[in-house]
Image 1 (spheres, protein in one colour):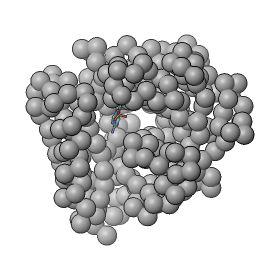
Image 2 (image 1 turned 180 degrees about the vertical axis):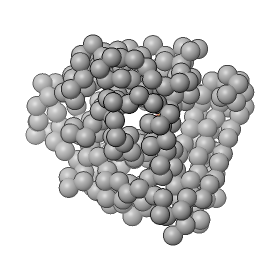
Image 3 (image 1 turned 90 degrees about the vertical axis):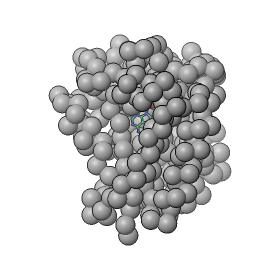
Image 4 (image 1 turned 90 degrees about the horizontal axis):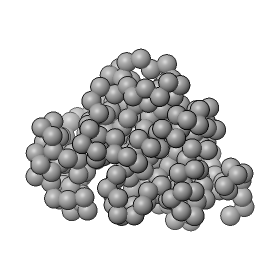
Length: 275
Ligand code: AMP
């Protein structure tokens, strides 16, 4: 099978590298038959994004040899209850602390996304790389951050995953994409945990992910209407963010399911509940 990486990034006010503000992006891998539809779908995503109308869109189609593709097992999903923004952010700090990250650094990760981590006070195009012990930001470019690329679900695995999570109301494209990205970063050497919430004004949910906890959805991590969101990759033993990013960009397909795609819910004490 020949695969193609299809990726898109869109900005308003010129290209990202000339100071344009990030509107939307996407990373997919498809077979030859799927290229045209995927280009169309990513173009539509860019042109109809609620963050604004881009005046710069970059679409790249690139062949990826099968033998270069890493096979990943999807992280399982669970939900941590949170009634509002304060509870959600407190839950994120608790979960990061459970991953062995000091509470101060965990709070710093939350505050960084909340305050707009790019130099212009907006969202970045990629992720912050944060040293989990010192709190130092390691990414060279604070507008771009580091980006995972060439990532997707194997089509058969995606069908299986959707079936496994549908009864829990989780079988949507946004969550599928986020699980693939989180699975990739958590499998990358040096990553301790990830914190993410979207920069889409209409989407308030986010997650904390780690090898042990899996992908933990938190229903409220930002106020609705806010264009501020982002990702923080908390790392240990990473000195060179460029080398770390090269690992994030090794082509990968999520090809295997965890034994349980959906794990029990966690309550505010971090305990399992029956719901
Ligand atoms: P989204 O979940 O698409 O709303 O993205 C939220 C934030 O995650 C963006 O503002 C970026 O900072 C970051 N992000 C999006 N895509 C990637 C990627 N492929 N790699 C790293 N960070 C990303």
